Amino acid sequence: MRIAILGTRGIPASYGGFETFAQELGIRLARRGHQVTVYGRSHHVDPALDGTDYHGVRIRLLPTVRHKYLDTVVHASLSCLDCVRRPYDVALMCNAANGIFCLLPRWFAIKVAINVDGIERQRRKWNRIGKAYYRFSEWCSVKVADAVVADADVIAAYYRERYGVRPVVIPYGGDLPRVENEAALARWGLRRRGYVLYVSRLEPENNADVVIRAFRGLETDLKLVIVGDAPYADAYKAELRALAADDARVVFTGFQFGAACRELQSHAACYVQATEVGGTHPALVEAMGAGRCVIANGTPENLEVIGDAGLPYRVNDVDDLRARLEAVLRDPSLCAEYERRAAARVAQHYTWESVTSRYEALCRDLTAGGR
Image: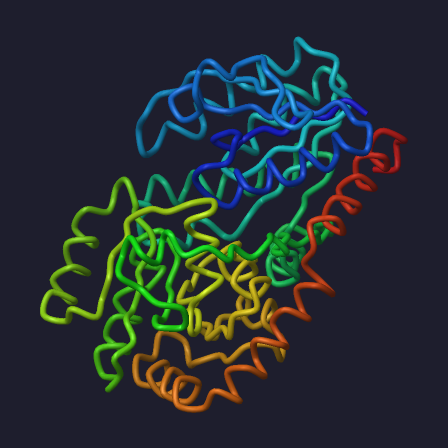
């Protein structure tokens, strides 16, 4: 099949979940004999890579408007305009914000599946116009695309109850290889199992402030490593730094990706997932895949991912998070048990090969007229 993946910043992946998704899925589909193209943004991926192959996947780069509200949608619209000029069988669109643009490939008889991600309009960073646009985009996604994909049962239930559709549930993969070297640890003065790890965009609904407050109350010589950044959240980032200013144990690494991030995941004493919005969070699944003991904000989405393989805390509760941290840091056997459970859960439910097989089956179903 000829498959286009749209709606991401592009590959080689160097930013976030959808980019890793496009890379891991695209490469595996190409290995299985499919012709795969991943669309990317020319300001994010080296323009010299446009038209080249990356591990068998064709890279197609297009411009966009670098603006909080326009970056994604302008690029998606241009990608769809380009897409209809090429003989694709299936377009895999990422992000519900791009739902309206799925009309273009459908008009040209290209089958379309859209991965809607989480319920983006719940994020605090969006103003009323942004939230209204996401609500409209959810509706477009279910009305326009041939198939809606959710990466968690909780998200599928939301779309089923609100819009009367039955999304295909395909999770995110988390079985990336552990990184055994310690270059990133040396860079920030860390040691193996000598730190608690948090990885996320530094935006209010991801609750890095809750993690810092919980950690500051611990009597430990371990460090708290905050990995992440955000392009439009300067006030919140300043708040976080002020909160940690008098605690030298808190380390801000800024945005990290690829080997550096995986190295930090591989050697942490435990990992904290504090997000309150979204579906299957890539950093959570990857930390579990690296065999880390995970402590997660007790939202339905996070509870679905960890099952009995992680420790939840009451939603956004600083004291309960601190109690969970104290429990695993003082009891190595408890930590080891949850490390074992986490790795086993990813191996059973969240491998990239199984994710690829399910997307491949969906694409075959679409092209065969099954939807």
